[in-house]
Amino acid sequence: MTRTPRAPESFRTLTGNLRSRVPAGLSRKTVAYAGAGLALAGAGAATVSAGFAGHPASAAGPQYKVSRSVDAAPAVPAAAGHSAAPARPATPAKVKAPAKSAGPAKQATPAKHTAHHAATWAAVSRVVAERTYPKAGHGALPAQDQLTPVGTSGPQTWMPITPARWDNAKTIVQQAIARNMGVRAAVIAVATSMQESTLLNLNYGDRDSLGLFQQRPSCGWGTSSQIQHPAYAADAFLTALHGYQGRNPDWAHQPLWQAAQGVQGSAFPSAYAKWEAQAAHLVASVAPHIV
Image (cartoon, rainbow, N blue to C red; front, side):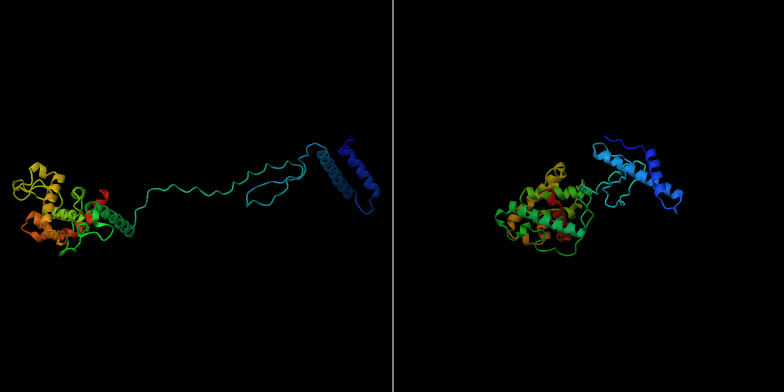
């Protein structure tokens, strides 16, 4: 294989040939620059030829930076005589962040809460009706399973519902549903307790009256300890209400105070009426936690 002439010898030979052929008007410096350029060009060509012959090409030739980034600057050749700078790491493609796991549900706005509550109560009332009156079918609920089948009577009053009152209301509703007496009976029982004891399990009252319904041991409602047990007191009231219902088949179409008075025999019979709206609201709120 023919060896590539060494650069100094090639340079002197080429420069001498140029001097003999250059026109008189050109300076020696111009000739020298031209000769140097040609010599370098010849050396580069020889190196590339060697690369094609099976040897790796020299890094002296132009090298280009490669980048996969979509916003990278145009490729620029490396400076001659220097190794190309290492390629800049490719900018990773933008990846859409994974969806965050759903956290706790946000509290519903009042409007949405009301709609959800209504839907829940509709389902609950239907379940209660099917337990109480299996032959009711899918038509309109009977009066016995409507919260306020005849509407409220007179001005309504509301009291703050504390955890103790909530628990007592839940106990009363639970007993009514367990006895398959329907939601209207639950509303009557809750309203009666709201009037008699403000829905609290009192250990005092008029004469020997005690508990949620101010029942009297001397009148056969049970012992003092039994009456002060909320589940027992609720069941005792509902037993008496069931007897009133048997004697008054049209009880569900009567005003609430009339049925309550039929059990309690109060000196103020119409006083139960003012709690009907809140009692109905409580039953609708408590029942989904029971059914």
